[in-house]
Amino acid sequence: MRAHFLGAVIASVAAFASPVLADAPKPRDVIVHYADLAEVMYGTSAATAKDMQKAIDAFLAAPSADSLGKARDAWKAARVYYQQTEAFRFGNKIVDEWEGNVNAWPLDEGLIDYVDKKSYGEKSDENPLYTANVIASKSIRIGKKTVDVTKITPKLLHELNSAGGVEANVGSGWHAIEFLLWGQNLHNATPSQGQRPYTDYDLKNCTNGNCDRRGEYLKVATQTLVADLDEMTGLWGAKGKARAALIKKNDKAGLATIFTGLGSLSYGELAGERMKLGLILHDPEEAHDCFSNNTQNAHYYDEVGIRDVYYGTFVKPDGSKVTGPSVADLIRAVDPKIADEIDAKSDAALAALKALKDVADSGEITYDNMLEEGNTKGAKLIQDGVDALVAQAHAIERGVAALKLQIKMEGSKSLDDPKTVKKK
Image (cartoon, rainbow, N blue to C red; front, top):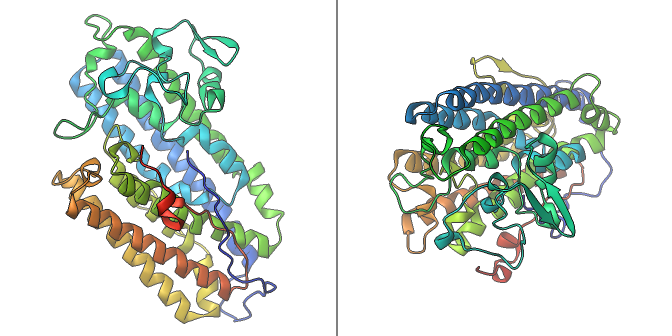
């Protein structure tokens, strides 16, 4: 998980003034609907993660190429709905403190399981746990402490996150499960994704050792993710702490929370850390869903989530819609011209990421190949997405100013000072 808070993007320091037009929603109603939307969207993420859990349990009960494929498909399907919830990050402290257990990235996979040492290496000066391999171990050392890992539990997996103060130590969440399902992506196969064999979980025909432990780790990691998503759903419920923390803010601060999440995800996190950084470094390991090579979908559904929150509308898996008063309505009531601009920039961002997604999904150019030096078409697709996301963020800023709010968006060295980004 990356977080670079580099400088402030200040909209307006003028005092907040609620829109006075008769057809404008009340700011308080917009804030309450935002909380309702969070509860529904996290609940949907939890529900689809439970569908994934069923597929993973079926795979572990009867390992085969087919059951592994179904588990992978279920991970991708559930990922769609988690990515949309990322628009609730950055503005809500409770979400930010929780997120590291669920979507921390990038991760040093050697902490969890075996790796190809030729490509991965055997040690890291920055991370003593670089090849700790919990699955093959009875204990590991974290600093001066010896930790018993004979029993894999949710508590242990959470303790592994940022162990030793290293953010790349990740024991739980989407990407730990992704690695366990796909294995390392060595970027040398077609399609370019991890090539883990199902026999890594076959107790009767085990490959690469520790198949029982690997299966237990996958099972517990999936249970832990489902529990974490259920927890966040509850935190946005009627008596949840995340809802209460938002609702107790005044209108000005509540709306600023919403816009901080939208602007930060669009600018610093997605355009910067997840897209532009990889383009600068030409590093396929900078692909967000690198093991499954599903990054194009992760980016696309982040943008869908930005639009969900901005427009106050969410489409459930069954096609039904949740709608309500939104910050888009507030901006349109105050300044229709700026509202039109945000609509246009948001549509352009969605289209740019859809173009990237379509090319990667077709297999013409996988996302990790797009990041390679000299891949002109791939680089343009990513850069077009970056440019559109930055333009969307700046348009949102103007909407914030129209509402006379003040926010601080997350920045990124990749966008703010690219010359300081060092190649590995």
